[in-house]
Structure formats: structure tokens, C-alpha cells
Length: 328
Image (cartoon, rainbow, N blue to C red; front, side, top):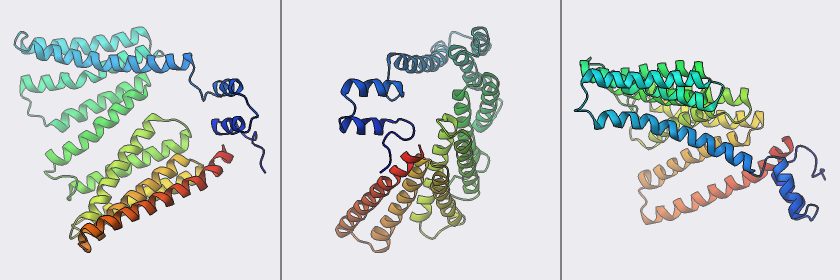
């Protein structure tokens, strides 16, 4: 039998010791605080401070936009652009003055980057440049990426990443005249999903910890890949590119599962298994309700299959958990 105190102290072991009577309630609380498993007043303060500063930044940017919109008839077109440019410059300078080594300074600079988008929208509206929306979002995402490089703030990178994804799908619609589930837009969407997944997995391997940028990239790639895989399973006739879409979805799931197992990341393994189970559920629904044309009986069969999948997944997680804890 392995020593319950072997390895780093984690909440599961501490609770097990408490259940065995080794640790009393007071000792358990103290141990959880020392290992960082129990929120303290300091940790709550840091959490609330971060959330409130980011929320205040977003609300300040929204307030600036709504102020110009509410006084649209009061200001001339040049005044509107001037106000937006002044707000952007002021926020950026305020960030530099406060200090980019402080959260408040980085948040202020981020507000400057966020205000670039409304400024470009005003320029296009006033001068009727004829630019498509994807060109605006492309410029906005590039500027925010520049801000992210300067201020070294994950929130700026995440915002630039989200704007980049929006740019891709606007480009598919406006420049290619297509949509993500038919070629050629399908190829672009699949390439985006593959790139996001590769970015997320690469950062997961190199960082080996909490990484918001990699996590967001992985979730975005997961969602896009799953949407394409599910569509490929459910669609009739398999138009051009749907086979590749399904292969990419399966490759994403397998990559998450195998890489998570290799580096000992149970969360990544769970994501891969959930991906595979989701695709399997879509395939079961296609077979039962479309191919076999089952009605009421199909609902019963589907319920049984989902129950079996849930049980199998739960047993797999239980079997994997001890190995993950020993690795910890």
C-alpha cells in the first residue's frame, strides 16, 4: 500500500486523512490554507480586484462608445473621430504612466487597444471608405496584437485571438462569398480549427499549467472542429470536404487524448474523451433516427446508449484518477 503522504499534499489526500481521523477539523482547514486549496482573504481580494478592474475597463470602453452614440447629432463627424482618438490616446498614455508592470496600467492600455475598433468604424462611416467588415476586424486584431506584445497582458492576446477568429469568418462570407460548411469556406474554417488546436496543445505542453491563452485557443479549436465533425456525420450525401472535416475532428480528439496521456494531463484527456463521445452521440442519432427511421423506440434506444456511454466514461475517469494523483 502506498504512503498516503507520499507526493505533494493535495486536497484529496488531506480529506482522506481527515476522514481516517488523522487530521482534525482545525488541522484540515489549516492544511488546506497552507497548500492553497482553501481561499483566504488575500486570495479573495486578488480575485475580486482582477475581476473588477477588467469589468471596469470593459464598461469604460462601452461608456465611451455609448457617449458618442447618444450625442451623435450634437457632435460633428470630425468631433466624433476626435473624441474616439483622444480616448484611445488617453487610455494608452494612462497605461504607460501608471506602469505596465501593474494590472491597472495594463488594463488602461488594453482599453486604448479596444477603442481602436470603434475609431476605425467611425472613420469608415464618415468617409465612406467602402471597406468590408473583415478588413476592420483584421486591422483591429493586428493592433491589439501589437498592444499585447507591448503590455504583456494575456487579456489583450485573448481579445486579439477572438477578433482574429471573427475576421476569418467575416472573410469567408464577404471575400469568398461562401460559408464555413461548404467549400471553399470549409477549407479556411478547417485550417483555422487546426491552427487553434495546434496553438492550444503547444502551449499546454510548454507551459504545463494554467494558461488562459492556450486554453481559449483550445476551446475555440474544439468548438469549430466539433461543429464540422458533427455536420459531416449528420449531413446527407457527403459534399466536398466533409470527409476531411470528420478526419480533422477525430484527429483533434485523438491528439488531445494521446497528448494528455503522454504528459499526464488528465484535463486534456477528459477533453479528448468528451470530444469522441460527442461525435459518437451524433453518429448514434444519425443511425437511429435517420438511417433506421426509428421513432418512439429510437428514443428508448438512444437513452440506453447515452447511459452506457456515461457509465463507461465515468468508470474510465475513475480508473485514470489514481494514476494522475500518483504522478502529482
